Length: 98
Image (tube, rainbow, N blue to C red; front, side):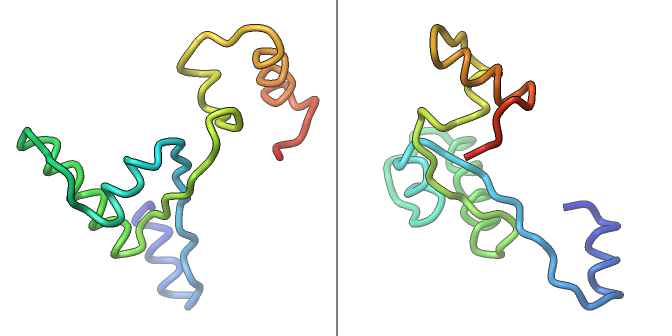
């Protein structure tokens, strides 16, 4: 969240909106919310702890979203057939998000 938004919410006494991060991997959600697991490298342990701290401090919220409903997948991988048509309709505004 931007510093200006935090300042403005403090001045106006408004609760800040918490950004939601959608994740389709339940293992990743468990790692950042509950911790644990075997982390073999220092940088991965650091990333996991930063994610857990952000959730505990309520800077972000992580929510499960099924893989077939992940809108961002169309921007990161090649989609074919009906998955591509659904993504294109959503991006072009022909269909509302579900």
